[in-house]
Amino acid sequence: MLGIHAELVAGSDREMFLIAAGPDHEVAVAAKHLELLTPLFSKSQPPGGLVAPVSWSAVVQLAATFGSAWAPGPRLTAWIREQQVARAGALGDRLAYVPPEGLTPRPYQVAGALEIARTGRALIFDEPRTGKTMTTILGLIEWAASRHADGPVLVVSPASVVDPWVEAWQTWAPHLTTVAWRGPKRRDLLGSADVYVTSYDTARMDAGVVTGNGRKSLRPLVDLRAAALVVDECHYIKNPTAARSKAVRRLAEITAELGGAFVGLSGTPITHHPGDLFPVLSCLDPGAYPSKERWVNRYCLMLPGDYSGDILGLHPAAEPEFRLTILGQHRRVARADVMADLPPKVYSVRTVELPAAWRKVYDDFESQMLAELPDGSEISVMDVQTQYNHLTRLASAAADVEITHGPDVDKQTGEPKRHMHLHLKAPSWKVDALLEILSERCGEDVPAESRDAVVCFAPSSQLVKIAGAAATKAGYRVGYIVGGQPMAERTKTIAAFQASELDLVCATTGAGGTGVTLSRAGTIVFLARPWSLVESLQAEDRGEGDMNATRGTEIIDVVAKNTIDTRVRAVLRERAGQLADLVQDPRIVAELLGGRRMADQERAA
Image (cartoon, rainbow, N blue to C red; front, top):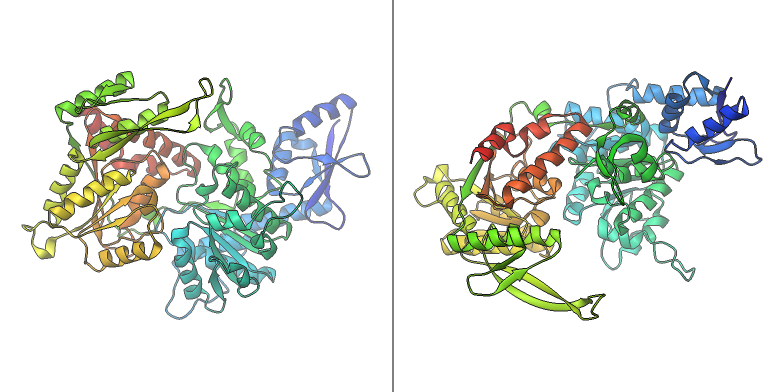
């Protein structure tokens, strides 16, 4: 009869030794099953068994795979019991750390902090504006105290929230020295602080790898040897092949080797399907998840394809095991659960018609990928993504065509490739709708006490600038938040808006969706939705900066009739369904873009 025996390697709490005993054919089958687990097993030295990093995930998978044949030894059994106690939340319900006077964390923040402290490794998927930053700070302080951990904390975040992170640490943990890791002299900061906060781009540069000639590139963040790593907006590393993802995973591996803590934060942890979650799982427990392919094959439902399959969601048969592998290491708090007095978002759609001339341009381009503009010029395109981008622009405003050649070269002809660029211009039927909304919210005829501030979003900076110019011409005070803008200018715009010095902020969803608080806004207008679910949800929450707010936010989508706008919204709902399934909160898809009732109205229109 087959027996799978495992024990912690003598003198180590990070590796386990595994040996199979039984008939040769059963041992051979067991070896094949081990290849289906997510951890990698290597031959032991001396030979005779296998060695793998010890992890809760490995233990869960071994037990699920081999059942009664699985027999952990005494030391490994003790380790498993410790994990069970910690993950079950049976280690108390109060923080030992007392925040500075006047600061009182909410009960759910205390619960999240304790979850971080129990294992030192957690994924916090609370909705935006629920105070994940404070939860994380309190949790890491508690973890460090209970483990007597000695070493700095490293926070990696989008550049726009580096300063807010520094401020939060200084506010909630003034006994720690916190600095922003940036600037040409940042290496001089090594050893000067307890907490370092840096951006993804800086982390990519400062967590370098060995170059081809054997010389090491500068990698001061690797030399930092952080005792705890925080990855904010961890969906930024969803692409495991991207340089910033590799840098963050490298830092996570070093922290794990030191027995340190890891916290991944995101209100939108996946943007397409559960496969997006793998990179942050590999940071949570590098030894348990060394290969995306192995994790996807074990836990995801796949639709086979010619080159790579499509991930449809978690595999129903494997989902219970997957959720057990992250027991006690993840949570989701919804705003509706913790802020009972907060009014809900109110959604509405304003449908606009394309002028006849541009209707023909749009329809011709959609059906033929070729169209003649009213001025006689032509646009054509072959790749689907460019077609979608052009359709989104043509649904919003008039446009001019610019033709460029190169720098890429056609492989068949050897000639520079021909590229067509659409440049939006007035008139914009969507901007006309925005002006109507502005007149209703903050126009001259609106009583001063009833006037409302507005934030306008679109993926295209061209459309945002057209909107701002039209609003300025109409007499409104306008500010901008767009890509490539100096941080000082962005900060000045936000401050002016919050101080009632601006009526409208025009922002791109990429630049204005993260790390920006525009809580004075009572109305958010989307001239177009981005394809990204993350950018869409983040932008919606810019008007909900105060957790004690007493009013909701009206979200208005300006949708061009019979255009790609409707298709984008359908894709966002599909992606929201994947996120809802992952975090087990059906309200996400039920409420997105106004919920099912709004979707029915759109279909009727």
